[in-house]
Length: 194
Image 1 (cartoon, rainbow, N blue to C red):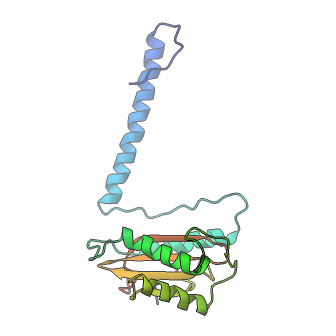
Image 2 (tube, rainbow, N blue to C red; image 1 turned 180 degrees about the vertical axis):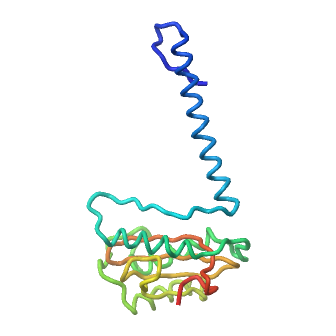
Image 3 (tube, helix red, strand yellow; image 1 turned 90 degrees about the horizontal axis):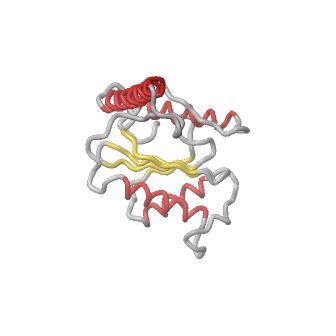
């Protein structure tokens, strides 16, 4: 239990009541958080979502948030991660695409200074596909983002089916933004729509 008061004052009935109220509030918040976590983990997922924006973000940031939320809401759960597993493969895919397009050889492994700041092209799709194939991931899907993909317009989207889930990611050459995640299958049984 937490008790707050001045250190020079002896604890009286007033400070004890305040301490009880604070302790009760802390316990109520903790119980609510545990309940929400349990509810989400046991099939009662949330029906809404929120998007956080930095002051000055434009409509594109909001639209990207809505795209991602629509995509996630359609995906199934994951029970079987497949023979390779997800986490290592997600990073392997990210690194292969990132290095091939933002830091092509013979550049150092950590460079970002060759960023083109342009929309991705079909030539970039081929480069990313070759990089993923060289990384022992030849079954990867790579394409330019479509309207229903969880990526900004003009970005490069990549995905790989593993077990009953997917690694899905994007690299936006216009901004250098990138993201990848492990996700379940879409209703079409694939990692990306259409």
